[in-house]
Length: 379
Image (cartoon, rainbow, N blue to C red):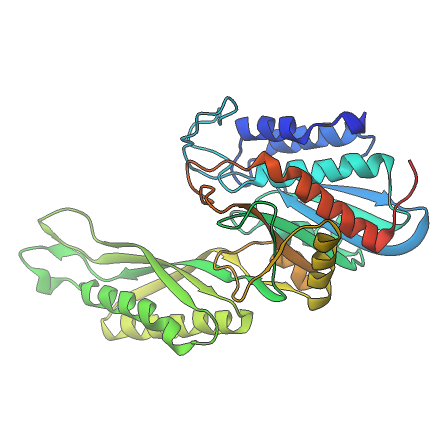
């Protein structure tokens, strides 16, 4: 029975068996099995391993999509809890196990108290960490042709008081992308470097260009983080002819973000040409900014206040990225945060574990949002 569902037990099961982006087959089967126990018939393999549940109310009305992600990270867990990851080098370090357990708790309730009107879609999404899953789900025929009126998702947030609801109209989470810049010259013997074409000077120029790039976009919370650089190989007898620089770019404005990328490519091409090098620029794990509608942000505030929950209004966007932005770029809605605890271990940390205490909070606010848009049917 749905009313016997324990989201904590389910979360611990998911936590023990984490799977990396695009490899979440077992996780998807676990979610599907639970949904079937509630009496639903989930559509599967949506945009990869994604699942979609459609819940119809008795009367016509709007369509609301609630989304949770379920992929894990390539991090070795350091926890001591009984339900620690059983998969070496993989763990739920971002709380996607908790996001999924919370949405399953909503499914359990809606299975016996459905919406009075309209349609509620529950989207369980793979491959968030790589920025791939949301776009693929949005482009799937099961979702792409649906007129969706409201989209909601939450992310647990360490450093905020537990149960606090964190909101921001406009940009909630920044756009970001990884960039790899490969410079190719000509390798030579270290005794005759003049017979080669060294990328060393251009490499330092690229690194300087990257660090200075945000200065041209002071109003867009732009940030560049150098993450890796390599010139040749550790061989004393070789004057290297190849170099690689990798970085992450961020901005809270999608237009500025695209301008930053184009600006970088132009400057890198100029540096390479001056040095007689060829260059390859590739982009990795791209995310657009998550843009909340003011109207839907207020709905989240209303739901929080109806539950007696404290609301924190961000003055600046989160620097990290969330690919639910792909849903929000197509349909209006809001991404919001739920505080995990002021001193809770940070996301993407080997000591992190989703706090079970906020599962009822997540379920309650999702359920309140459904009730606000759709009313409540009868058991």
